[in-house]
Length: 181
Image (cartoon, rainbow, N blue to C red):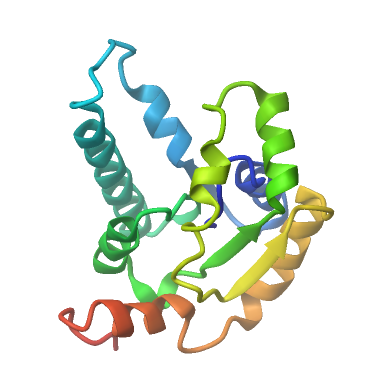
């Protein structure tokens, strides 16, 4: 699932795990950021630390999936390199790309209530996170509950299209990679 901070991805993922058959793993990028030591770093170091964290997260997700696990990922594709990295690493046929949308007003309200995000984070991500423009399924948490979105997604999964959005994006954005069988 891709969406801005505070869009409801983690809440949907928790609900999905209750609805999907078989064992599934929720892998939120926030968990990877939380594993990092809390040592203060300078603003010149932070971008590279964050990039390594995101790259490590992508490889952990790919490893779990390659080992045969079903993985529900919540992600923020607000930088193009993140999507390009995922397109290289993940099996494109097996990825169902879900866009989680929410109005900016509601995102800002949630962010304020949460109090655990930098002010304006969702607003900075908002114009970029869905820039690639292609999903297999989209939901809007502005008014729909996480449970309703999870139900919609679980109903959609058995009828996902071919080629998947991920396959189409891989062909379009990473033509240097071998074609998917």
